[in-house]
Image (cartoon, rainbow, N blue to C red; front, side):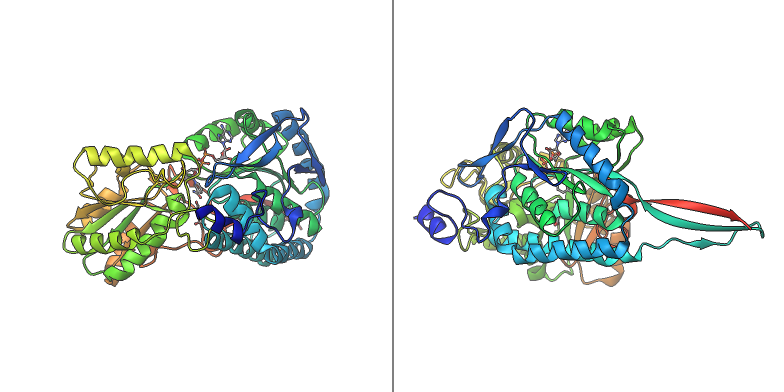
Length: 501
Ligand SMILES: NC(=O)c1ccc[n+]([C@@H]2O[C@H](COP(=O)([O-])OP(=O)(O)OC[C@H]3O[C@@H](n4cnc5c(N)ncnc54)[C@H](O)[C@@H]3O)[C@@H](O)[C@H]2O)c1
Ligand SMILES: O=CCCC(=O)O
């Protein structure tokens, strides 16, 4: 029954999504305007996390293959860095409109390899379009300054120039939008790129490369190469190759630490978006129904696998029981299944390891004194990568879920009584990406937002991401801001020109 519904909706009898434009599904890497295999001829397999069926194979590139791509990107930089800002703006606009034209197909590919429900995948593609449009609007406005000198016989002005070749390393949880936020800024500024997508989700990245080619982005500017077993050597190559000027990475804090050490050898510019452990705080004066909706949006998007997902819920003791009951009721109404099936609200996790991590957090909490209002175990009847959306109550700071990012569909609820107490609890972790607060007290909004050690605060909303938002964290969640009016800064260097007259 389940499979037949999936197949009638989006799949052919061969198990591949029915695409209007089959050319979007690429099984080669894109380097210097050519579609290439790995120099060894080796490939690796990619699997659908919902069915565990093979999707296909893509090239298994070595560090030496990436080094060649970096050389091409360096060569392309010589001319691309000299193009006009308007020209680059137009290229980004064209790329954005091709994404819009192909958005249904791109979303299907994304769901197929990542598992998220199709409506969420469509939302992710729309966010890529928004990122490219945003940066196409920023590109013509890269201004320098005229600065009054202390010396009456000297004039100072600054120009902003592209930093150079950018190494881009991205995760599987947003296989398209994490690339678009980085490559959009790179193209806007005149940088060239070598992109390493996650091995779990290479097809969205390759489809973006295909549309870059169609948009007329010059060869060597956008290079996408896939790798799986060589990831550590490739990471080292990107970080240590002297032709690369900047490394931008989204992923886990532990890998961020490795890359930062490696990039230190050539003192590259780095910007890192790393793991989070977002607190979601509901004060006693909050609109409880709105807070429940916000909690669902923040916690369960991507089955809990976004870096800004709420991870720790702190609910005021006066409204705790009501909030918990309402949240559990909504979560029990979720439809868990294959993301390509109509009506699915929760897809699978990316792999078995992810399921094990969620279960470790759940069992640790249950083994202490937490209780499950809903869920609490893997949903093996749906497939090996599914976990039942879970709400736990009576959670406290002794449990792993409050200290580590779960990255899965587990809402863990603790009680608090005072503002000071909850701010302390919220800040008692090493990371600081996002936080959410629900309150109708305006002075509390300011006090608490200012007291939280994070890069982004959602106030009475569980959804904060958009291209206008300076996206990024503090503490061990990394540094640098993507999107927004600041999103180009990491791809530019300021040159000061001092002119004696
Ligand atoms: N801050 C953000 O914007 C953001 C966004 C998405 C994910 N994340 C974080 O990423 C984590 C989940 O994603 P993940 O499991 O893919 O993380 P990950 O760090 O394991 O992988 C991210 C990327 O790094 C690559 N990688 C892994 N080891 C590497 C190495 N030694 N050298 C070079 N590259 C290497 C992977 O192949 C992938 O492309 C979560 O902790 C999440 O919070 C953060
Ligand atoms: O994982 C990163 C979050 C990205 C987003 O919210 O779109």
